[in-house]
Image (cartoon, rainbow, N blue to C red; front, side, top):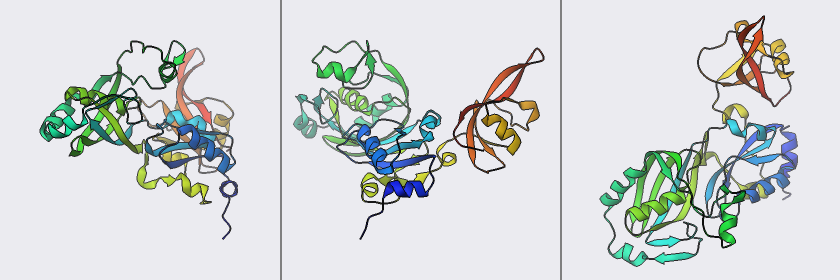
Length: 318
């Protein structure tokens, strides 16, 4: 059997702007995924919406073509299924790091009760502050933390960062391992939760497994394995209107053309919905497809400031 070529399949689909929902395998970096997709699809412009560590698996949103310019408009909340090993402390706060302390046998023999664990979890819900792991991509003094750590430099004093934990539920508990499901905001480090929860229980802890189940509108049930693409399967693309959680608005073909050329359109000339939304997904009656992200702006007309619709990102022809 002759395998199909994903790059040829991409051209047949006439992709200029689209997303992929990839189920990232364990053991490779997010950069590796982007590199492989770029090669497989024959597209130079490829990006992603949120790094996963090599040990982690699950939903990784990959942008193709002009969709790379739309990554900032994706919803950035995420859901993870995380397994934490109590009693084990590593320098990376995950199982792949150097072991600093190992009290796993104590955590198994004299484990805290499930009720105690559930009570400890309450401190990690809502708007909290957490200190990132030393091995992370955060910049300090022009260097990434993991570069400083690998160079053997003493860790700098890190300031806590605000994050939001929407939900945090105990899924399973078999000491010294516990599994939680976390729905959180962008910038949350699950490794920090593993470390801090272990410390709260007096045992220390490290992240032993992590699977991302959702990222914005993308979920694991609809994800495509990278291996499928490598074996010649056609890409399961996600259209812009499915990916972006932005309110939609349709312009006439004439006004759509004006907007695509960089012109602003007064809201008084449009039957525009009220509200405090800043960005909209704009379609044209001509093509019926989205072509632009529009933003609410102000411009001076006859000496007065007037609200108008302005083009933020034009990603398709009209």
